[in-house]
Image (cartoon, rainbow, N blue to C red; front, side, top):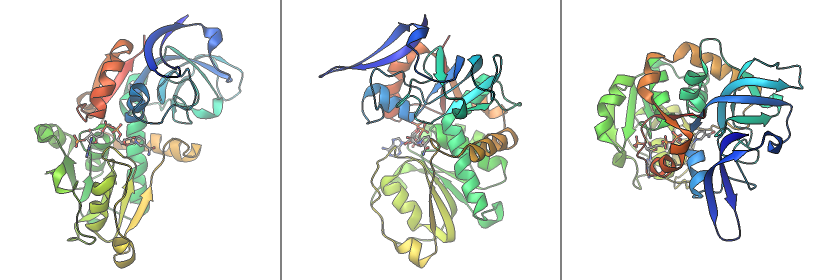
Length: 326
Ligand code: NDP
């Protein structure tokens, strides 16, 4: 038997409980993992509260990422004792996930734990941090360098935002952090932000073209914020869009794209190719100041996850929530 968060649904209600589950109930897969740490991502909070259509079949163990040790493998890619991590692939949505002491998954979904990280550190980064790195790599691949100008990070005190600020600052970029929580100014400065701007400066409807400011953008919130970010990006710049904390809508015009050659780059971490995700994790071992991991993270137990989910959707959680499942 092992412990896990289980989301069950009947005709009327969603129930989310901390349950004992038999190993024989684990879904199909060729690798079984003893999980050390999982995390709480925005998507997990949507699944647990039922506020977003994340879960595709019930009952479901949520948790889109985990790190742990292989206990049994029928695939040559991994053997018992290997340290592994997983992000995405529909785990925690369509296949039982990481908010659990055990998981059984397809070997192709796992990657080896990068040598410089232990399981805890890998989960401080988690899917949010790996997504932040995918955004930064898209900007860099577009030719944006620290000399190009300022980089805007929205939802900066959240999980993706915090890691993005840290990585960009470590790479020498001038980072402008947008947040709705000015009480986190000192935190964002410690991560390397040069300037903090109020979320409200970007979150209301604005003009199609605004004063050119950003060489690049990491946007985690969508909606008007994304539209305003595009409208104030400099000629030839890039906006990476990875999130929807403000909304899934995109009330924008084509003006920034056709008049300023701005590129809007969509970032998906879930089905990102294996090579690209390994490259992102390798870059995280180089470009993330591990001293920031403690500042960014808060460790909780499996039993605390349900309460924290609601706080996360209210934008009240700072940085990354790491879940010790044991
Ligand atoms: P968090 O909850 O940790 O961070 C979201 C942040 O957005 C909040 O901390 C807050 O930052 C800001 N925010 C919250 N509500 C609003 C609002 N109404 N208007 C404007 N800003 C708001 O979530 P994560 O960092 O884990 O995820 C961020 C987004 O990225 C989510 O939408 C998530 O689904 C998405 N995501 C996408 C991935 C992909 O593959 N594309 C992978 C991982 C995440 P502040 O207080 O600083 O303003």
